[in-house]
Length: 146
Image (cartoon, rainbow, N blue to C red; front, side, top):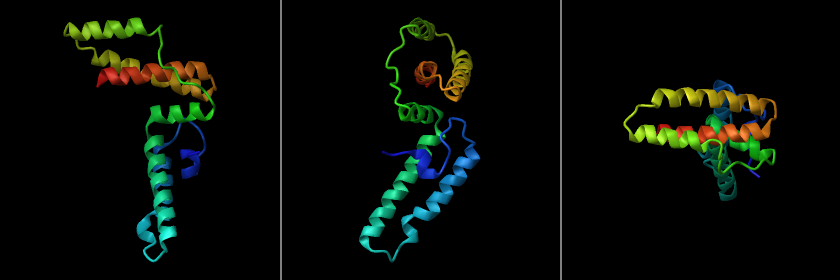
């Protein structure tokens, strides 16, 4: 199973210093970039290309907080939410206000920041149910903002 943390040699945590992530990415890329193996046989070239692809996927996944949270929760065997009836009234309100021409972007930005903080705390304390709820809501808020 693909483990982006293992691929980049990082600790499995939600709070990743993006500079450390980038350094790990470039270090792994130096070791797996296909251009470094021009004289290798075809099997080695395929293996290196596959490893380089995994390094790129790991970096892309871990630099996105929502993907990183999803990865951590799934690694813990947690089922993610696909609906949140408690959140639905808020979503309906946002849609109605937007359709009425109201600019709610600053409110959504504030909601996004609060949910990211909630997600961070829940993941740090292994409160998986709380984390899945915050992740679901955060995903939705980001979609509405776009």
